[in-house]
Length: 396
Length: 176
Image 1 (tube, rainbow over the protein chains, first blue to last red):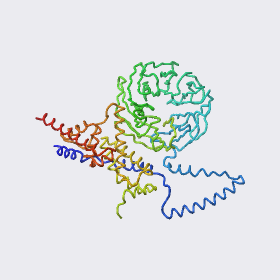
Image 2: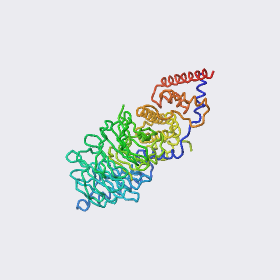
Image 3: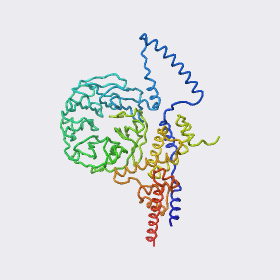
Image 4: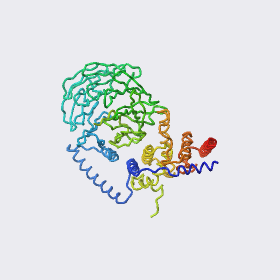
């Protein structure tokens, strides 16, 4: 009987599918990019070339030394190693704009990386926080004790002094207001300022540092109070609505839906959906920590990093569909196979920042509308040194 | 010109020879992908697991002991990555989200029943069955890929076949 079962199994699986050629070529490119940097070339011509280069370097070093001795040239031999590291990661040495976006900005280890679709770049500017305006026409950044709006070419539009370092920034979808959180001696205050740098207003003097979330109509703002409860501030009525549901206590991330007034609230292990009528539904994500959330069209994307049994061995972006009652039903998930450090969505697209084992990488997904259970089709946008920390990412 | 050995290709790839690395990739991509598919049962997951495994393998070539065979080492990375992913999915979502096996073709009613029966096997047993009868690995190769003793692989195979045989018997009784 067993041999009969075996033959049935062999017959059943005789026609396992084959990988697509497109997938194959993409995997090959990924694999080749991961090859170790060649330590040496073995062919004779390369050795000859190396010998000539060494001789040239020796001559240049002697000449540079002579110039340095008279103070005419700054000589740094430490650059050689740096150059080698750069060539290893040359494929994504500059931040790439993902398909369909006007621009992208990432804050990595306290420095800003920004690229726009028309080729403008800012790289390495020390900032405490950053946010792109709609269509990536401007970027708002925290520099020292100021909120600064600048064009992607680095030209400053305006600067507004703040009572401390800016911890997070969110630019309204209509571009007319900027919300920002300032660290004042360890306590955080939320302000809103008009997009032209005027009309600064204190919204709340006791908040958490989490980036505020704008409602799609730009007329309301959600933020997390110092006590951990989300609050919705309505600019039209100058009113605060506290979401006091115990399920939303200890909120960590917020995201308004692409349409209407539904607000998604992440707590350490739950996703909560709050509706303007006050109805709250919540869904557990299991033994995982939520690393970010955002809306892809009408669906909610939640980035989670597994916390048990070993931290961050597996990370997933779970995609939920919102029912009429507000109940969340998981319809799919994408797995970048590396720890997710930040997540951003725009329109029907998803940008996920991950730190992979091989190195830290910012990855972008292709359109994920209609996602079922599918893997993240990742487009590497920027290769970063191992150990770098991605604190924010945003594409517009 | 004869086909280069794995060891030669690995040695060249280590020195940055992209042609050698590409040859190594093309030699084992399909089997790596089929292993990933056999374990996960989903094309999209197999695409990324296999690609991720190659990426990790190539990044670790410097540390690979070239006296050892390349293929089992690669298959072990693939299988472990795929299993990690499935286990994490189960922990995160409470169960497996996708159909565990989809051989990708239209099946007769009996085949669908068999597929369902394979899907009822525990993950550990199912993986062994799929690697044996889907990918065509020998028990020794499966043992190397999953880092298990050959005896454990044989035992899981035997118990799986027993479970499937019981399924067929039950089906036969029902039909009668």
